[in-house]
Image 1 (cartoon, rainbow, N blue to C red):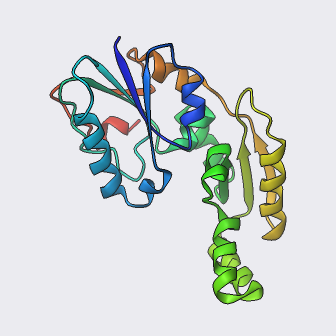
Image 2: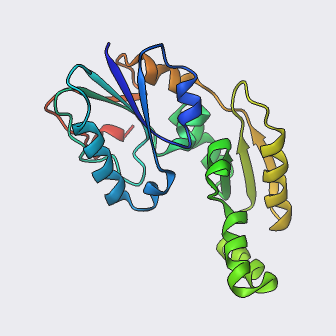
Length: 217
């Protein structure tokens, strides 16, 4: 398999740690997920720009608010994790993600990548604090989080999590949420890197396209 990885920077380090020598990895800006149409267009551009010698493109994305839907495999086959987003990717399976979301639906998930990219309630609060002052910013962020009860930090294998743990606890304490740590898993990432047919992967052969129905149970 002559593969290339195209992934969100939030899962980049986890994926790169598993790649065999010679497999290139292109990391895309985290903020693309805020606009699924832009994410879709950027991913298609990256797919189309893949060198001809590559026969397999591994996407370090899930469906991502349908940002992956409609992507076309041109010369190389596409392999996409069958998950909604990177939470399922880092928890190791779609099944575990569903179990967590059904068990505690009001959960805001944090990961090492999300914290490093600066997209979480605390950074949002800091931006509002500059504009509105501390009291109003805190009140506004509490309103945004009114349906959340838990901050869950997903750990990364082989990485010291103490800095990220302190940060996640600070977020939970500031907004009156419970804190819990969830063990991350590389199981799905390893399947992605292997690129073999599996129920946890959507595989699209050259000439095909990613369809919404491919992500359904």
